[in-house]
Image 1 (cartoon, rainbow, N blue to C red):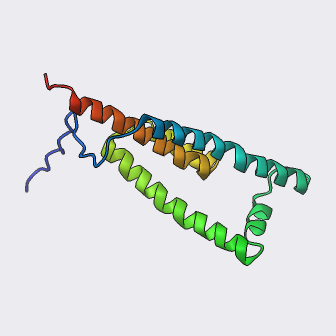
Image 2: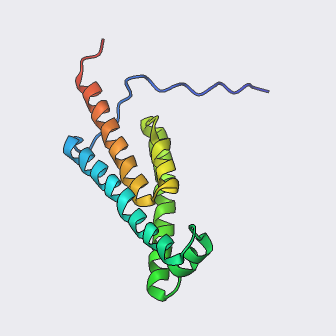
Image 3: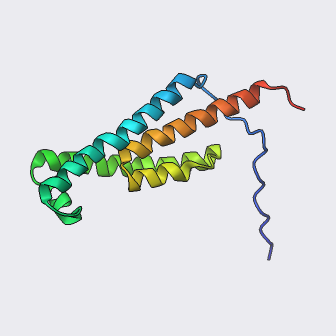
Length: 140
């Protein structure tokens, strides 16, 4: 009857093999897309609220999001894509030790997936930049 040893903690200067050098401009592009992803869906949500003459009606929203085959296609595409991306987001955040990934997760559910997904990509790109700088510095 052996006791399990706790898994070792990753080394503080973790090395991640990078296939290409992370880009600061790409991180800022993702952040800009995140801002647009917060504003544009909510402008449509506000139009929906105005047209429905009351508070946000989730049942009506879902019904209208599935009102015809084109809307169903977009809704199902978003559901499957967002689910896959969210799983990857959690796995990738743990792999790269992105401590603030929960902000992107909350933004995906609380604001819009179009906000949370690029926000995570921004956080990921910034983390990759930090890791690449750490790998270039001489070990002490």
